[in-house]
Image 1 (cartoon, rainbow, N blue to C red):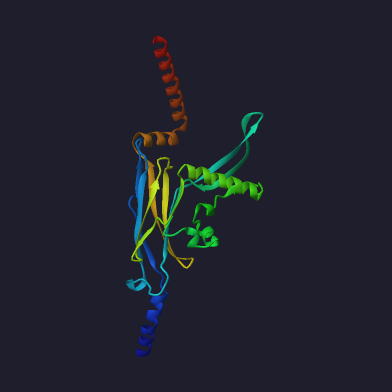
Image 2: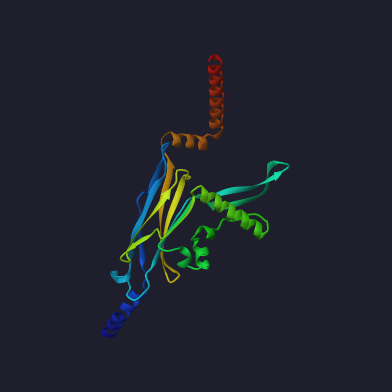
Length: 254
C-alpha cells in the first residue's frame, strides 16, 4: 500500500503536467433580434483559460487566442458576366454547396504567424482557408478564380471579416474580442468557436451558439413566406397591383 501510494504521489505531478488547458468561453448575446431599425450589433466574446494547477505554465511561450464567428452554410450560384456585342450576358458559372453565409475571425496576432497553412486549412482559420465545397468539374484555375471572386463579394458586403490583433489577453488567462454583426447579416444559428494555440498547435477549443432571428413584422413576413409560400406570393402580387392602381388613379386626378 505504501509503495502504491508513493507511486501515485510521484505520478500526480506528471499527470497534471500532461493535462491540457480548458477554455471557458462566453458571448455577450446568445440571441440577436433583427427588426426594421436594425443597423448592426457589436458582439463581445470573452472567457478564461483554465490551466492545470490554476497557473500559467512557467517557461512556456505565451498562447494565442483565435475566435471565429460563423453563420449557417448556404448554397451559392456565382455567375460571371461577359460583354458580347455591347451587351452584358451571363457566361461561366460556379456553384458552391456549403459556403458560410457569414464568417469573421479575430486573433491575438495575424493568423499566418500563429499556425501554418496546413493547420489553417484543417480548422478553416482565415477566409483564404475556407472549404467552400465547389460543385463543378471546371479546371482548378477556374475554380480558384470563382472562389476568390466569392470571397471578395462577401468581404465587400461586410460578411467575411478578418481582424488580426483584435483579441486582448490579460495576464495570460482572460481574453476578450469584439466582432461586428452587420445589418445585412442572414438569420439562423451561428457558432462562436474559440481556439487556444501555442507553438502552432491547437491546445483547446470550445463552441458557443448564437441565434440571429427576425422580430416584429419582419419575423411575421419571413414565417409567412416559409410556411405558406403560394399564399404569400399571391398576396404580394395583389398588393403590388392594388398599390399601382391607387398610385395611377391619384396621378390622373392630380
